[in-house]
Picture 1 (cartoon, one colour):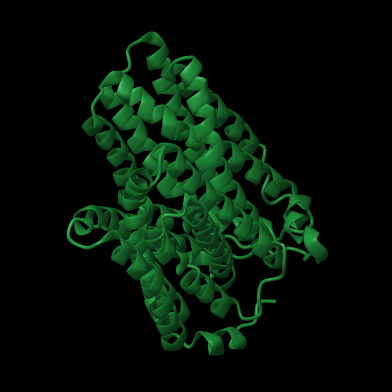
Picture 2 (cartoon, rainbow, N blue to C red):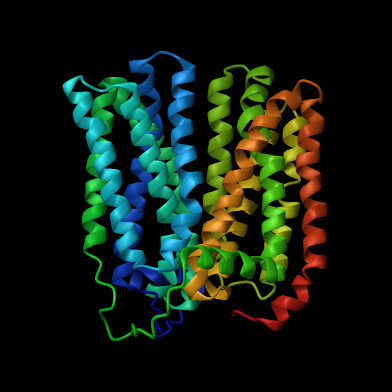
Amino acid sequence: MSTHYDIEPVKPTGRWRVLAPFRYREFRLLIAAMSISLFAEGMWTVVMALQVIALADDPAALSLVAACLAVGMLAFILVGGIVADRVSQRGIIIAVEVTNLAATGAVAVLGMLGELQLWHMATAAAVLGIGAAFFFPAYSAYLPRILPAEQLLAANGVEGAIRPTLQQAIGPAVAGVLIGITFPALGSVMVAVLFAVALTLLVSMRPGEGSHIVMTVEREKPHAFTDLRDGLRFVLHTRWLRWTLLFACTWVFLAMGPIEVLLPFIAHDRFAHGEQVYGLMLASFGLGSALGALAVSSRRLPRRYLTVMMTMWGAGSLPLALVGATSSLPVMVIALFVVGLTDGAGMVIWGTLLQRRVPPEMLGRVSSLDFFVSLAFMPVSMAVAGPLSKVVPVELIFAVTGIAPVLLAAVALVAARMPRDEIAHPLR
């Protein structure tokens, strides 16, 4: 069933605009459950690595398990988008949490019993990856059904702030400390408990209740492949959407490999205590992303929303050229903070545009296509970055990574006629 809700608007003002979505019970439950899940996923990253090392002290084994998670996500992300547009998004979110609980709970039980094997970890990773492929499109399509349109920016800002904070910083840190003083299996138990708490909150959601929510007519469901074709056609025929995705694909290809693969070597080669420096670099990027998300969501959606978004992503990449050139740690940390700040702010605007300008009946498919192209180009970028650095100086790679997005953003703005489009479709 595909439903759409008309919600009585709330007009928040001032700097507390970002808190307005918390007036709605369903959002409070959803964001609380997501926060706990993100914390659990952050812990799982460390639990998975240390548990695999305890089972088979071999980098190839960890690569295999990590690849299972990535392949599971990539293989099912388009399917997840189709399903999100055909059945209850709330039901999908709950089903994913049940699956996450089952996978991590099985690892926890087997670990405590001493029966855990490497293939168990690989299977659990694949299940979690598949679950993520169904969760993200369903969440993106569900949010506009429980909140008024003018509060989607704030809601996306909240999610954009808590994701790097909990998933990339606090979750891994807590898992490292917990496992450091105990053993990996206890970390698995903690992850499973967190997923159980999140599931309880999700089950407590009662969509459809309340005077501010009204359901409309359900749509007729064509064949699944027809759904996918229609979603792809909408993306290709919608100029601002097509060019933004083209820019995003190119940015992921240019930037993710250098950031994920080459940055650790820069930290190791240019600074003493490279491991700690690398952690500081990632923390500065994550902190910038969280603050950028909060900053943009604390205000109204910019009138020139497409221009602002593309400018942030384009000009915001320039500091990456400094990352490749400098041997000053403060300069590098500030540069990564700025990149994270503009990336986080742009992502909040982007998520809000999808939810406000894509028809509700195909939002799941469009969100999954967006996620798919990012996933598809990320491993390619990582595979290319290492070998390329052996024949091209790292300084030049980061210079291209920083400068090229500026030119690409300008091309996208002109080719898609974004300034004209945003004037014709005001969202304030």
